[in-house]
Image 1: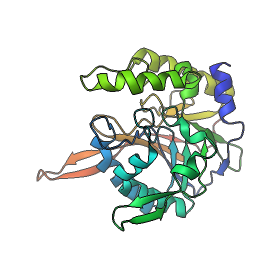
Image 2 (image 1 turned 180 degrees about the horizontal axis):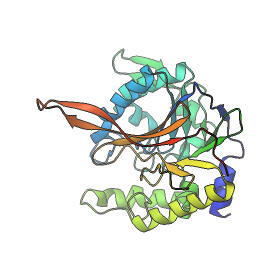
Image 3 (image 1 turned 90 degrees about the vertical axis):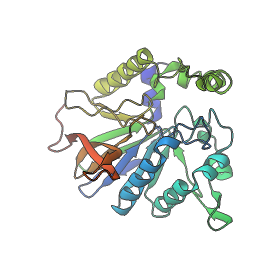
Length: 294
């Protein structure tokens, strides 16, 4: 099966969510939440992410995670990830209770696509504050893709993007084995994973070309993660990328509000008195109205 076919298949049974003038969605990707150990790349940005999450919760956004939310290649147990970042999952559960949470799976959390996995590992968690089990995401479903559609038929296609990467889609179990038993130990001494589209510029460019070609051929807006490289440009391309939450100097996401896509960066900034604060910076915008003409 070609990359084009794999991407198309991701949307074969995708749920369609409304995209109207009042819609507020925030798209995050590639959080790679781990077990809070030295291999947990999420740890360095966890406070930025939590601050952003609180902002979007209070501003009534619907949270959409585009895959690789949890690092299940380097870690075997989802329960340990939830325990390490229970404050994050507690807030995500509030989104869920208000029907404002949608989750996709990527290559690093492909396990979530299994029929019984969410019920067994994501329905409840042990809350360290209350010292008892609490509901997390009962009855949640993890999707391969989601479509946002407005009344005029304009559609935004959301998926993780690993479908354009042969090694991380068809041969994802091989990649998981290499990461878990070879590249994870080597990461301690600074050796980058050459199989990763996020860490290998050549693979990153190849993957992004496949994603861009799909959106061009389909004449549809495609928003992914996977490569960790944020992208929202008005240059004729219909392929955009939410980036990741493991950048060295901040996290990125895409907001959808007032029929406009906005690429945002959250980072630590400094006031004139040298105190630190979490800043939201708009990097670029892409208006969806008037309707795009193809």
